[in-house]
View (cartoon, rainbow, N blue to C red):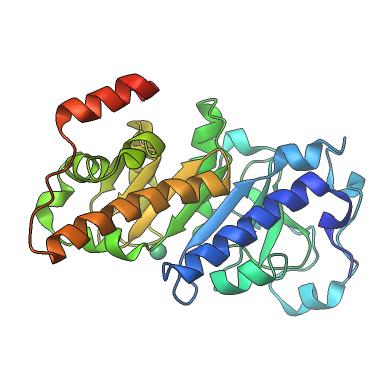
Length: 290
Ligand SMILES: [Zn+2]
């Protein structure tokens, strides 16, 4: 079957990264059932072929009206309402995990379990352009709102990731850890790499209803405070970075630090952690800021 990826190697590479990360999320036990989401901005990878419209793409959506007719769509180009208006996303393209799709399936068959969408010119709708009529995640409005914010800020970040890292989520069941930057300081002090590779620390959003507008807004507010990784109390993390592999890496190093903390506690002692002086030395040596 034809795929939009057949003649777009840069786009194909981005989707392969998504599939690789989806596999890691499943292997780590962070993506039970249909848990978690990935949305990446692929506008550059599509526009680099000199194409600014769907009809000009090297490979068009396969002409397969039957699945669309049976689904919620009249045709591949029927715009679907986002539910909000996102002025910075006009004409942008995103790859999104499909609603109710499993990460473990996305890992093996990304274009069967996710789709590429284009935001229409009114900035309030999207159309699915490839490869199949896979409806995007129900979390699409909040992910797109974050991408709208990132573009408005001039950020180079193109990827957003939501997942359920077991040990990190467990730590949010302890109220003292939810105070601002308490977890950040504990986790940074467990191993130098956490300070270096998650240099902005871990933002905290108090428990809010999954999929709610309030959760999306609180996430953007926390990113705006300077965090790349936002912890949703008793739920999971939301991370942003240049690409999906980097977003995953930030969550991975944080969760590794939690595991070191837990291992020490399981051995019967409170881990000492690197000292403030050692952390400062590290920050100065590598120009980590904050
Ligand atoms: Zn979740």
